[in-house]
Image (cartoon, rainbow, N blue to C red; front, side, top):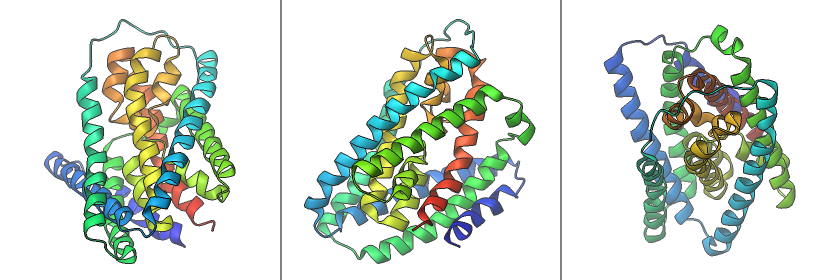
Length: 298
């Protein structure tokens, strides 16, 4: 039931065929504001936790384990896609503002840190914070559904791009395996590890969903691991594109259709764009479905 409740605004939003550009731009700005609000509240919840000092070391250790295993799994599996569907790249398109993109990601981490400090100074009831996050999350998913519909990606376009689908499947499969192994190492329920790994880079969504169900500590693990995926991808894409394009495109996860897409295009040329969009789109659809599903298992 929880899964259906969480997914209903996403489906409702996807059913709205909005094409009015000014309205879509307004939705984009609203999404940014909501993401900042949710991340700030997540930080407040983390700062308000009892026995925080005891929890913090575990949060960082769990996050580092998940990041390391996910990186190893993705980069071990994705070259297999290159062997099956080799991609001939054109000339490099130029430089991208890597530093600016890293700074943009770090700003989001700064919002969580600011909320964390606020929670330390003025502790709040975590149950009230979780209720607020749940309500705001419904609005976030509604707007995300509208954006996904407005992206114009049809089912036919997705099904006719086997390389993009294969990259998405490999990223998702190896990421979930990394999540399951992380759960085993730290003696967590397996479905919790799978939920932590299912965001594949969509940190605002994974952090909010996991925090609402498992609390701010686990929500912080989901957020930090997915944020670090984005930061690492920005660095790895130019380095790996020539040798293994699937790895360069795939490690960005769900961000391959938006945030890391300019880096992919600049490093690999225009022929990489449809592949990245399909891979990122499939993973973006998978996150809102799989995370609530795994969280509903116990």
